Length: 152
Length: 330
Image (cartoon, rainbow over all chains, first blue to last red; front, side, top):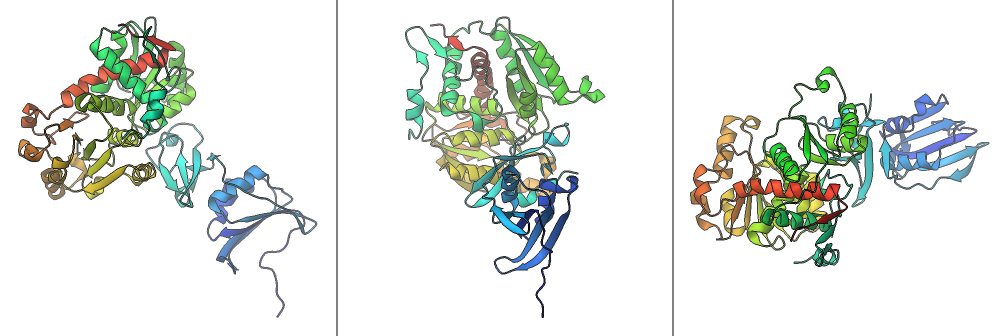
């Protein structure tokens, strides 16, 4: 039987692989990829030897910056982020946790001032005991990364 | 144990010859206890002690302080007003949101933006958590958080520390019980965070549903603060130097649960039979029924002195935030 790729290869752009299953949508919002008008292919729950199940995002004709790639590590600490040119990997972006994330997500604490004032949310990112926490700059509450939801 | 006192002592800022104190808080905001250093805290306590024992100089002469209370407050508001007036400053502001533009839909940011052009410093009490920080981002003038929802109440924590220092002659090495609503009580949150700078053993007494939030427990652990959880006052009274009582709001419980909590977390004179002679009872007030009125007559009661100390601590804070150098009368 012929082996085929679940998600087709891209000629130029960025491939974000080894995203924990279920985090791809967060990453699309985090990078505002839906607003960039570039072609985005997303794979959910793909089988993976390393992770059993993983998500994957391919963005055609868009090269992620280091800053954007760093943001991904909050939700996908082991993601591999490759820049593709002419179907070849020309760069692997080495990431680190960013100091914070502005906008995009809303504070899970309903008593936070960020829900009633016209202000962008801001979460400080901290790693403690190998766990990534996001801390609301305003109400100072500490959340697990899975608790923050996209701002609608 | 002087875990961090060595550093603080080397930063001592009083010049004994001319009694000039170089402020460590000049131009700063005071929003959260965890942003204050030990040296800053000690300077506030030191100056508050001076103000309590001497006539206060007119350190706020020609200064206007905006007192913006978006929700009702008695002690905090009036002690800030008293502190401002005693230092020669003038007060503008409001004590509820009833007659404000905010009722017409004005944002907090717009209100603060305008007031920061009128006043030299802004004091904010607001029901939403993080409101004081947002105000500080908007204001060109220093901001003091006078309580933001269930988040922080740093000036209360400072006056608690001052009171403990005053009644026990030290802070390090004490055993302190925090009793009551540890989940929603902002005074408890600020005070617990202040404990990370001192060598304090904490006993946390509350029903399971009102225990200290995980994020504060984690902070205590990270900073090596020893603490344990307890269900009743009886267990901890003989062990502690300070009993910090807080109000439990009846509406958070059904009747049966409330009766149980009442039995375990309400302080009566007979519970004090096993107390150490130096035990002092604190409470941020107002109390409802968690401290029996008979306790007021015991030598352990210290909550009214604690409330009075609010003026001296807030005087010290205002003086330090608005003066690069504070000259202390001798």
